[in-house]
Length: 195
Image (cartoon, rainbow, N blue to C red; front, side, top):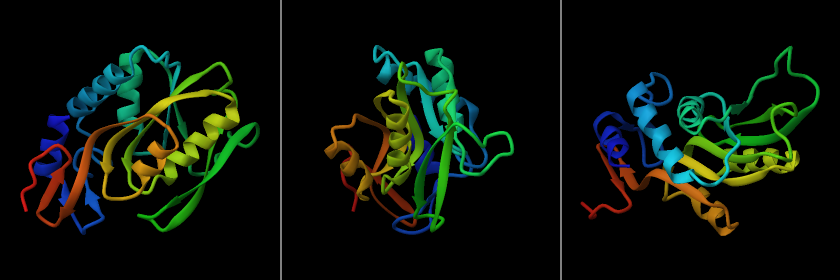
């Protein structure tokens, strides 16, 4: 998605060869017009897949998931990372390790919102090592639902998550797939190498 790649190059900050900061438009401050375009792109890529629910994880996956849900006309469910006083029973849970934060969280989704009659698109902001995606897949499997595929806003293609998921036969649709990055430069798959 050229618009997203251009936004990453213009406003993203590469902090290291493994850390890309996009908090000016995706995961702190949100660019609504860009999120709408992202939602429409995911809806286009997954049209005809029979999606009944979109599943994401709090908090950075919510904005693109809501826009995709709006375009597809389906509800969005987000897995919670924190315990809630109102969400204590009847849960699907999975452990997810965050390499960025170096912590493991138990994510949870109410059984009221996912069932065996659902066709689910998983959507997340980043794919690096694949742990969040695997946790969400675990929840879809616990619900007995069908996973139509995974939508990723930004994939760090040089890290193992994408290959791990694709090797399992899972459909992964990525809008911006980074081949490599270093402070001051980001290169995407499909671009002519510039190094």
